[in-house]
Image (cartoon, rainbow, N blue to C red; front, side, top):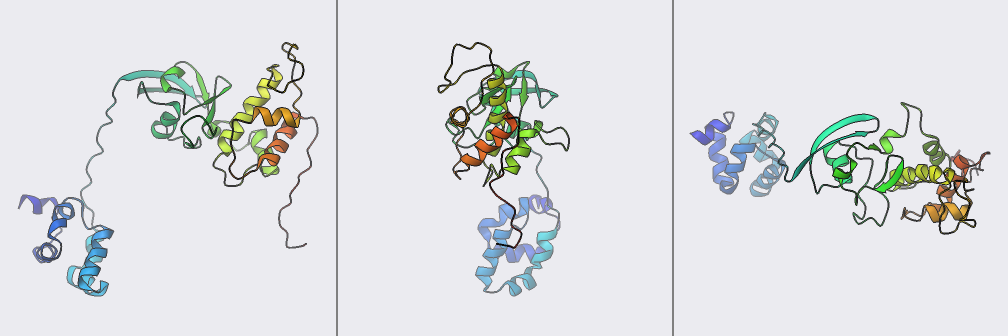
Length: 262
């Protein structure tokens, strides 16, 4: 009787048929209600969905509201209190001291633009900006971001106005599947700041020009973006997109929208 009270809409006749056909599933059915896999199992047993629906009123059973267990309270081990800003919004969280910045963004703040690719710091899909510098969020502990400013792909645009790098990526088709694109764009935005402040790369010719802006050639862009992998191979278009934002004049678009003509 106690089990029956958990599922009051289940009649004695329905309960008896279910117990005869699916005795091993009764505990779950009483607790959570009829699931799709239960229905499919009934079809297999009876040989016809019509018969199962007729005997059990299965459609009505599946449509009934069933008790939903309260979500268990989040258990945090080794918790640390964290105060920081994400995309300009102040956040205060308690996080596991071992939690990565990527997992915190995706799981705690539901900012899923930053992607988990390799989870080993090798693909760059998780790249975000911390105090304007690009970091691999899968290798960065959330706890290290105390009192810092984190910017993700969601925070680059101003309302409905896209960041110039986002606009350029669209113009030059700098993405195909799009999985790596958030990391590519965040990395490209940081790259512009690095070049402007005179930070040199492996291919920079004059490494003695302190604080002198670096002119970004195609070679410079490729070298500085080498930590962001695109499995679709959109690299030439990514370079074109960055060149346009960096340069003083527009870079020719190498593709056109299909218009039905040849």
